[in-house]
Length: 425
Image 1 (cartoon, rainbow, N blue to C red):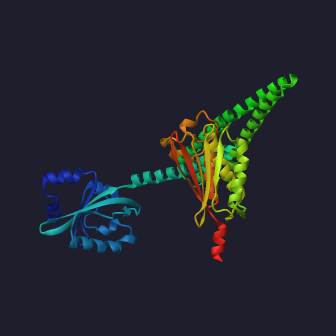
Image 2 (cartoon, rainbow, N blue to C red):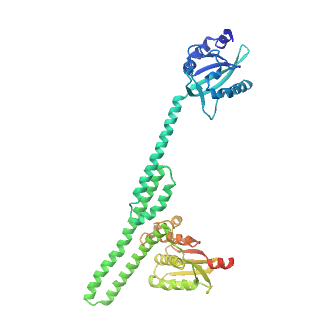
Image 3 (cartoon, helix red, strand yellow):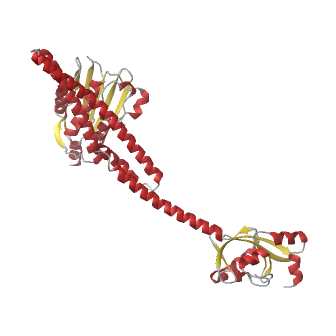
């Protein structure tokens, strides 16, 4: 190609000034791939001297493995010469005069000079950026390793908590194992600490009251025995019994929750008559009712048999009936109703107690939750959480309705394995 054509490409003084001062490498290429002119930045970038790139083929600036395919790409560009970025979504590589390869970014434009089409390539050496990206990836890998190690340390610390909290922690720990981000692991540790605080607070409060009652009553019994005031002795002995029963209930709640959390509750289904079980539970509850309270039991389908774990069903009924008594005033009625719905039994417990505030109802089955109007009544906030877990263990579900100040009704739906096995036959 003649010098006149080369000079026409960079003809004006303004264009020459821009061409020489650009911080990007600029190479002007003819249709056949010959380099017409390159600016100083391009010459330095590829390791060539002044004007040494002129009349070389563009493919000389590429690694040998890309040259054949690039000829086809160059031909396609001249057929549809539109400004574009090369290699979108993939890495581009160039080659210096000494054979060293380096990553680049290239933008293409086109023009006509003296009636001949030319391509203009704007080239940037992105080696430094690639090094930074590699360093960033390595930093991210180190951060992941650090996060994994930190998570292991967090899990090791939680194993030192007391037995009940460690059992509650198991659920949190299982979730931690699936997490890869250290922030999530730290959030689970915070949740565990809150549960521990709740447990310590509730346990210390709930144990303190009955223990104080026992100590004071025993002291008074000693005094009354010396004075032979047997009626007063009997009164305080009964208070001791009630306090022991209360402590037993608290311990049972914690032990039940612990066994449920560990998955150690095994089902032992057996066939029995539903109405007889309800009668037994009602009779046992009579000694625990508040003065004047009574339980009205209704189970119209007498003789109907059910196959479930009777021990778990008893626990569910005792908990619901105890709540109905505890949150109702003296002289109030409690209704226990059971009907068969074909697939199983629907058992309901209704009371005329203090009811549950509407804003509290969505939290009612949460561990340690207590309604705002129950703060003066002793309790751990675990009972209904345990009931729901037991009901789910039996394959059933539980629902409730409550009106603040008027009472509540809890309905438990229990499937009957006896019916299922007979229908399968």
